[in-house]
Every structure is written in structure tokens, then in C-alpha cells.
Length: 215
Image (tube, rainbow, N blue to C red; front, side):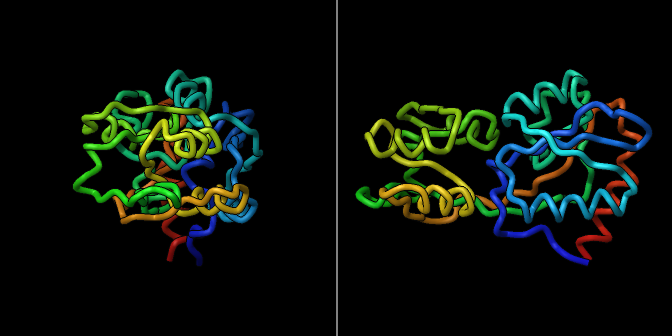
């Protein structure tokens, strides 16, 4: 029926699901999510017969609160991101698949995948794929809360590179004079909806809905 758009700001747009207000009704939070992505995910939940209402939450907070059961769940998470949280289980069919790229500012030399460990990365709190990048760095790392702060760190030479989906980089480039330049692909990742154990009964219904939408 369709596919989750490549034009959305995916990793920056972390969605969360709050406590169920009544049977099969969920409030989903969005962190600067695009209108197009919101509409597409709305269609998936409509297929599952689940009512959705949107709220806004930061990425790291949404995952922690989902794990505590304060939220019904979270979306656009990697399997690795939920490993520390036994109360969370992912829906098998990915909500989206995205490529991550190595970026530097336009006045810097490109950094290759093989050379990453010799340079200082700047990451975003709540973006769990950065944990592997940090662990491999021999030059330390820096972490910020927002993409705009990340760009400022690179501009002021307090970091050498970052790793982002192209949607976030394009959004930053559209808003700032200093441009990010893509060096090469870092990885391709699958992003899933995850639910707290209180709501695991919804997994088969939502998995079927994602399969139908992505046909």
C-alpha cells in the first residue's frame, strides 16, 4: 500500500506512545516529526484499528519513560537500543529503514569509515547508534541534546565529524550558512516500534498493519 517516506526527519523525530486511555487507543508523541511521516504512521495505526493522538517528547526521555511503563512504548528504535530494557519488545516488521552517513563541515577534510576511530565524534543524546561510535573512538567524544548544537560543535572545531541520516543533515543545511558534507555511508539500520510489556498484546495487530502498509 505504501512505504514510510525517505524525506522525513527520522532519527531526530523520535515518536513515543503514552499510556492507553481506553481499549486500543494510544497517544503517540513526536519530536519535531514531519507532517508526511506522521500521516503515514497514522495510516498504519488506522489499519490496526488503533486511535492515535500526537504529543511531543525528547528522544532520550521517551525511551526511559517507555521502559518504566510511563509510556505505552516508543517508535523508530533499533533492536540494540532496547537491549537494556527487558520491559520493551519490538514489533518485528520495521517501521523504517535508513542509511547513516559520516558528515563533516564544508571547510574540513572528509573522514573515512576506516579513519573514524582516530577522530573526535559529536553525537546526539538519545541516538543509540552513537554508543558504538563512542566506544571505538581513540580521541574521545562529545554529546549534545540537539542537532543545532551538534553543528555548532563542528563549526567551532570542538569535534571532527558526526553520523546522521541525510534528512537531518539536509534540515541543518537549509537553516544554516555553514554546510555539512557527506563523506561516505556509515551503516544502514532498521527502525522499529517498541511497546511496554503492558501492551505486548498489540504487537500481532500492529505487525500485520505494518506488513500491509509496506506491501
